[in-house]
Length: 98
Image 1: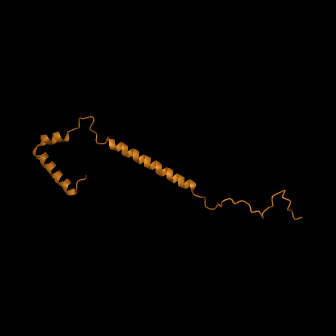
Image 2: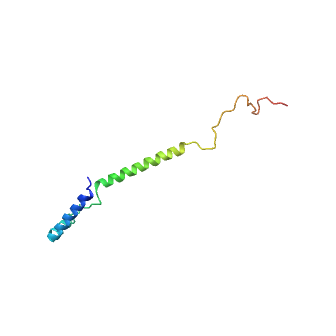
Image 3: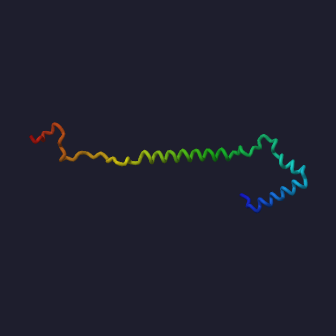
């Protein structure tokens, strides 16, 4: 849960007052966990899962858009219709007029 601006300001004031009163404590607190090789704020396990989910969502979205694009009819074309029985002018039908 995120802190409100007022709470952040109060914590910053407390931190400043502690650092001013006891510089040794301030040094210990600032270096806390810095020498631990497992301590890395940028390498959180949740970050990899989040990036994986975002990648999968992007792939699904691209697949859906491609499906819509290729399934849409092309404008200006008409579907092929079979010839009507009255339009029997194919060669060899014997319906010549001459």
